[in-house]
Length: 523
Image: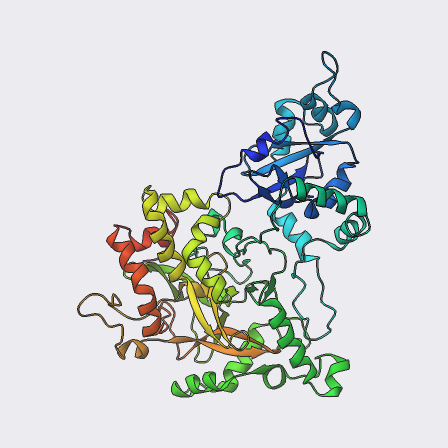
């Protein structure tokens, strides 16, 4: 492997920028799920070996063997790896099988038929099931709902990597030798959450005229290593330790009688939930009883019937009360009441991806370059086929689905991106009639907007973590549109992206929704 024959890495090294990572999977049929991602070092003719230990072990690779990389049809920057035993790889002029033939026999991918088999990648559902089994929390209380935390590998893979990595000095020496002969840069982290977004995720949520109570919520992208999903919120790996710390601190503050017995005797509305001062002030301004909101939130989370139940991982919303509908004046779609909604009703936990300021800036400015499969083509289509309009279209789309958070989920300023990670709450519009702040007659700072809102995002602290809960501020009749006050600061922060996109000739509805998505919605 230190000096492979010319052409062995030709498929790999031909991967164009900006694909800086390649996906590798074994060529052995039935084991495609053992795929790993590794950073491509262009110009250095090499790949980092640290994350490939499990793959090498499965292939049975030993010193002297040659690894052959073949492009997998239909999957960008994805390669099937097969092992050629050292005896078969030795060059014997005029005799013996070629490397390609030997690789085909070893991996069962000889000819076009074998390569077609390699293209059948495992379903995302299968990968999610594998990911959800990783990283179960050891805490009996604060760890509720954290089963979907994903590490860099499963426990068995960790053992294998430790066996192959830390306990095998020969592999460490080989990697050091590789580094000295062709400098390898440190493994780059994938730009989350953009790298998890595919073409299907370029929306706030799926547009459905109505959602029966039993319907499954929109699937968010699979968890990346280090992320945490709780109550429909996906936390960036850099924020996860802080969230865990907040839950642990809450658990430590419980009375001694509850720490050992669990939460079966802890009243959800009074002992597991808390409304911070800003939330109390907001509810008081609209004469919404806070105890109603607390009780309704506990019911929404499934804690009213079973006090000690774990917090849900996926989207949390009252689908039977909510329906998507058309709103041509506000981006094409909005959220409407599908049944009578009472004042104080907790309608949903606003789903999304929670991140810090650095990740927020990277998503806004460069996210369109780092999206996953099919996203580039979809963004180009929404930009009317003109590549120079993709950046401004992206900033309009991404910015319209981003919500600033203050002291939610933990103290500090954070951002919630509903792009690809949102639920029905992402469809709630602002009541302003003319929010284009650069035009005359705008109502960005108008006080009437706040008066036209019938719902609001209310922070509710649940078991130590703040959740953005969409709450009805008044009774809402069936068919009435749900509207919340975004705030003048939000509109001022978004007007540049909006104004530039419209100046470039882009239509808001065409950028915000996939083609044909608005068809079938009630006018």
